[in-house]
Length: 392
Ligand SMILES: Cc1ncc(COP(=O)(O)O)c(C=O)c1O
Figure 1: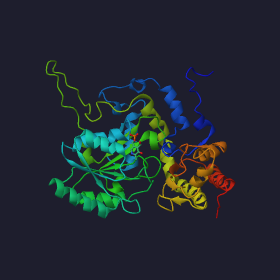
Figure 2: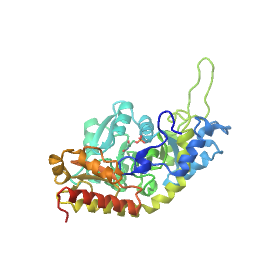
Figure 3: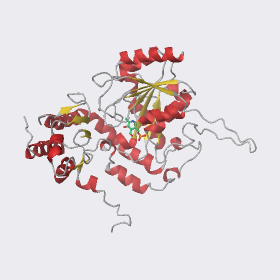
Figure 4: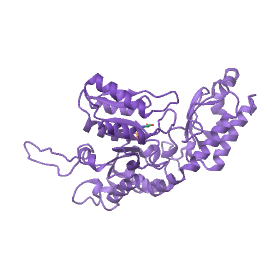
């Protein structure tokens, strides 16, 4: 029976290969779907919340153990699960940034980092990208020097996107963290496009915080994510409340301020937990994912006039492609204009390309099987040929 809102089938996922740039790594596993149904009630994980009264201490279901496993997996000392990566940025900025402080981020930073800085009263300062669309350690050092001169003090925090959302380029976090350390600036790694889809070792990278997004890259329900910290910083960012009611004299035990007392509950945390064994397994097959990404990109590049704006060969599954010299030329003459491409892809069972885009667009092949990636590659070439483009 259909439910009243007609939401029992999401055809994008049921009937199509979805190459949407932002959705690929967040798709739920079957285990997460089952767990989400069983734990749909808001307080479903709180049945056994016994002293100490904090969600990340709950043993049944094994939320405490999940936290410990996440920390071990990322090679960091402590982890908390949060409602989205942005809440991790917010916790870091709120802890480290005072009003008027300059905060380092980059010209490829996600907007949510700016929001976190703004909310804390900080002033964002971007490190420029180079002509390859990379953030280099030299550019970071030079910009830190500029900012110290401008503000007459050292920025208290830097955000770095491990993989940026615009190009899907993998940045040299290790070398950049080394630079930040020379200036004693804690560095928060935005792993929204890495944690959960590719191996991430926070200790090897030398970063102070690793922040991940559950719904973007950990096959988890939204809003979910995590923040991991080194022991050095954990005490400060996960500080417990000092509040006291002035009339009642109440105190609030071990509730953590930046976590607003308790971390993720219900569907979100249980979904993350259910997918976690799969996520741990899948990051080990990152090379195969990259191979499939290359297969599709190479097919696109075989269409004359097409250029890839991301690093080539690809090192990630998110890619920015420029088809102004190919599909967009078709669009100028086509009766469906730019919509012809998404429409032709849809006919072949592929969705996720923004309808109307034929100029510069992004897609993500993460999670496609070999056969699906081959189908996407062949479909793109076939559409090109059928519309008079030459393929070499
Ligand atoms: C690079 C990047 N960072 C951060 C975010 C924010 O993640 P979340 O939605 O988990 O807060 C996103 C997605 O929106 C993103 O693409």
